[in-house]
Length: 276
Ligand code: ZN
Image 1: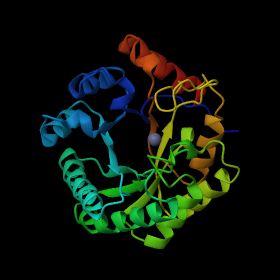
Image 2 (image 1 turned 90 degrees about the vertical axis):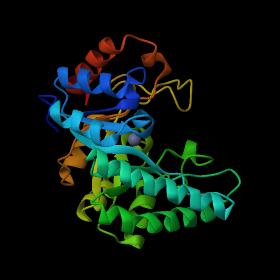
Image 3 (image 1 turned 135 degrees about the horizontal axis):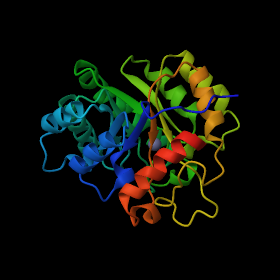
Image 4 (image 1 turned 135 degrees about the vertical axis):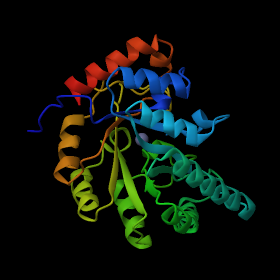
């Protein structure tokens, strides 16, 4: 049986989880709540110097865990695929300036592109960005997404696909982000988490919960304990596979975003300590 979590030192919150807050508010409020890490979504850097944001994060005692997100490689036109690669190169610059060691990749998909073709675009896109990422000491992490997003967000939908793609590309600058929301249903999950850890590529762990009914395919994720995902069991598998990093709370929720964000952050901490 996996032990309960005792403190918030390994708790990381994604800036999108507290969407109404600016980057400055998020940093100050997370630090004040005793949270250990922050994952910064790129929109939160708009109009900011990422070097200054990184400094603010470190001076507040927080760790910059990841930058979210790169990817979105597939497109029917070659020019669009090149634009995506260029944008990912800019994301590497932002992560390096911020001091974040990892960029999470939502690999992309397009209803115009057949999935096998999209997967080739993804591999080619990652291979085009990896040398620059490696040179800047930034890792890329493939995040497999739930198959309900295979039309427009990701053609990589299982951890096995992510592990296979990492094995095919075989770069020390490439790893995987395991998100319970996307992967909890997979009968091969425990086995593929073991495989991911054994290959040294398990780089991030994201948590939230699956609500029944889910009323919005994107923005109706639950707090840990509000739904049916066996989060603690999956955390146990991830830890048994050697993962010692942050537990990242990533919740997109119209319901929670409409609430007072200080109350919501308190609920996140309570759910983290009791239901994760
Ligand atoms: Zn995630």
